[in-house]
Length: 469
Image (cartoon, rainbow, N blue to C red; front, side, top):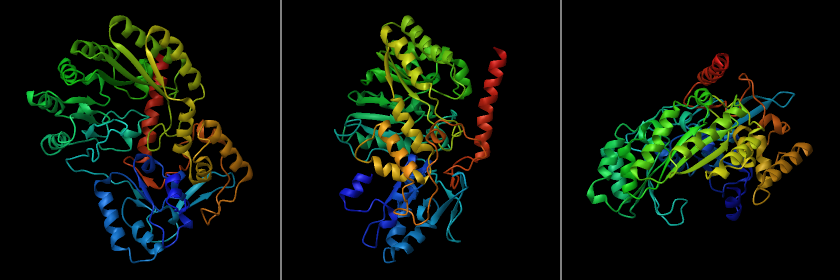
């Protein structure tokens, strides 16, 4: 983002822009969850779904384009879902802990509400190109959010409520539009197969007139996999099925609220091979709150048993380290350093037995946590690592330098900010639920008290399971 601004000769710091500079705005789930690390770079942040928010933003910009820059921003700050960081001031105590984030003008709202689209159609690809991450595929958003509410899941909690696109008004027209440009269709969503008319959509796509379609779907709930589903996918050139198990340990699945039994995992594997698919991809996680080494052993054991029972099914485990995400019940839990060795444990157990392991870099997970949990004091660090030094070591070096020197931050914020907190405090520490969070002025779908209750339910579940053992 900063490189793009510099290439266009736009100051990267919002308070250095003048009347000739454009309004720089951003949006999407990362900024909606916690915009603060990026706040000093952005004039406006769009919080939530874009269907209504983006047209409202554009109309307002057009209506106030004759006003001075400051007046434009004041007008935008009054629109629900539009966050103008320069009008909010963080305050810290003598220990550098965040006390509050308050508006500096009386008419500016104290809380900015994430906007939620409640129409009966969702999004689909606007551009199809061989240069995309998924080349030449027309992506159709089938559902938004997820009703399962796994305790760590940003895609579920931040985007509540669970919504589905209408079959007749949304999905079928979107697919038909995509087929004018490509024969590759991807059905997208956090829990695609929980669309109430998913089977109807599959049966429609299975008609003879669609024989040449290449169909792929994102991760599905294991409990929803059927023999008919895998046959239709195989018929339309899919080779793999992807399910998220999070952990092979039943104890951990209960703690994170993953409503999934081992029997359902095995049945999904059986349906995959019986339907003609050749690959089963599973998503897992290490370093979850309360996780023990034997829970990671259970994940390896589960995959090895699937491999033994269905030997001609190619297995892949994609595994990441738990990263706390804003607006989820586990936002108060830190990254666990032992996750690094647990990734190695899985590699040791699985690779020699013909199971492909795709681990996300532990270092990258740490950087994610830094971005996820920091406030706007992180901005100078982001500026320092742009263009180079993007390894974990580079981030640590930049963080330490700015922390030790307490570099003057007046170049991007006219109000002085407190010194950067300790690295481990942001990355690894479990936070008290009474702590003022950097995103406390962003109103998500659920009240923080509800998130605390969900966290307590997880921890109570852990105590109950341990007492039974």
